[in-house]
Length: 283
Image (cartoon, rainbow, N blue to C red; front, side, top):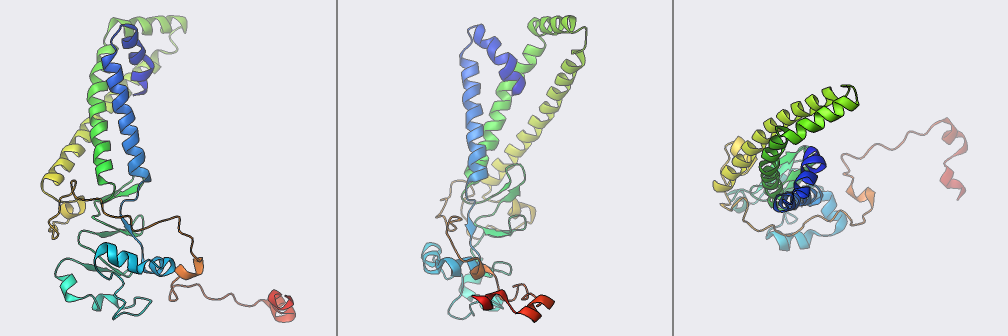
């Protein structure tokens, strides 16, 4: 895109070809918007047990999800041994106990080892967007992949046409003549980068067709890789985003989200504290 917008875009604009540059710019802005939306949006995080207790949102989450994910009726507050208390009617419908978050997660939800959170309709963790792809941002991710593929289809043919045109040859000859040939390797490096970009486009096309296949078969990446059944039988793309269950801006006491069995041990008194006492004794 850098080569296109630095050289090809102005060349087409000076020639009076406005449709192609404007369409390319629009698709580029769409790809950027979908990328930011995928990176910055909530994928469908289900808060863990300690966060639910600290934010006092247990009743709200029960109303949103339609079941008690904490199993308050039969399970202690810390959630130990929760796998033995999941109601049979929930287990039959695909609800599973998360040993890390200590909650009952709904069907198609899974715990992401990278984000360390349970995510609704978990698809995968994408390192390119540095975020999970799940129920609430999958359509943003698919829009990003689609717009990148469309941008590549629009940019690469025009870029290769311009690299093979007389204008590019004249520019190379002029710059190499002025710089005594010092910039000539730079242009060949740009051509090599263009070839690598072509390979990347083919890979992005394979990724797009792969997700089209997942959408057509109503499966997620995890369900396809592990050969899991879509118990809920809900679509992957066209289903509802669902409510936002986790609000990272909520203020809580940090001590309330530390589990008692994982809390660090109290500090060992040192020699000064033994001789002079604790600082709190002076207040």
